[in-house]
Structures are given as C-alpha cells and as structure tokens.
Image (tube, rainbow, N blue to C red; front, side, top):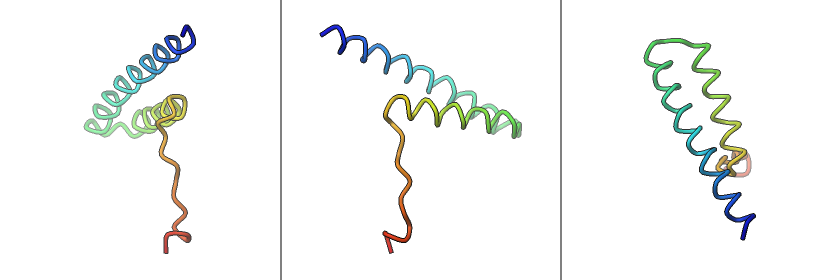
Amino acid sequence: MHTTIGLTAYRRGVIDSLRGWTTALEIAYRSGDVASVRTAQDAIDRLSRLAGLAVQPTDERAAS
C-alpha cells in the first residue's frame, strides 16, 4: 500500500512538472526562442519517460 501511494505521488509530481514544462514550451515557441524550445522539449521527453507516458516510435518499414 505504501508503495502504491508513493508511486502515485511520484507520478503526480512528474505530471505537474510536465504541465510546467509544457507552459514553458508554449511561451518559448511563441517568442521564437529556439534554445528554450529545445530545452523544454528535452525536459518533456525525459519526464514522459519517467512517468511511463512516452510514446514508442513506430518503425515505418513495418507499417508499410
């Protein structure tokens, strides 16, 4: 039970961080700040992997 509560809190924290980085990405994109866009995208990718939310890339050769 303790582990489930801890995992839920961990994921909630990661998701809150994702929200913050998504906002930062939107602001950077609108202002044309390429370096900040890349930083935000990298952070979102890392956090998505941590939360188990990452989408696995598809193999286009297998799809055709």
